[in-house]
Length: 175
Image 1 (spheres, rainbow, N blue to C red):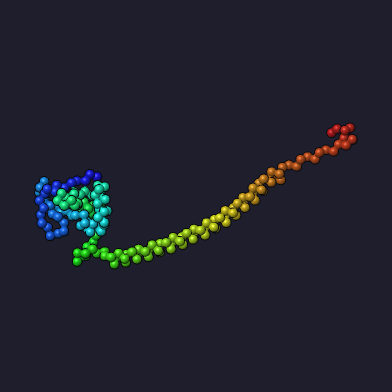
Image 2 (image 1 turned 180 degrees about the vertical axis):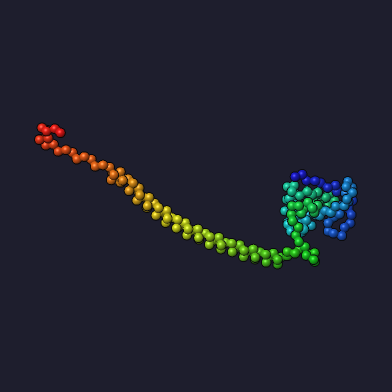
């Protein structure tokens, strides 16, 4: 993605919001821009995370010639990072206590998942032990049937004729 630079030689219009309103001469429209710190507060991210996104061209932003800070279009910012909900008093809805409570709940959920996974591992081990006993039983049966199959040709072969006993008399009398 190619980063688009904003013409900062535009007229700065006073705004009651913490954002900076810039009147773009080329478009004739008024656009709102936020600083890096305001963008971090609006998304709940660190400034370094947002700066990293700017430098990797995930977010389009411009470096201000006036103070050297970054100016970011809120629509461009929220295209990559979702906005954090703001309460009626203007403070973030998720405060430190909410974060601790959320972490506690998340920890409880993770512990339950770990316990369920341990039960699954125990069940699988018991099944594996049962399969090992079954395999041993099948091997024993195989060996027994193999021994029978090897003995079968000897048992079914016709008996060999008994050698004729020819004594002295057999030489004289031929069959």
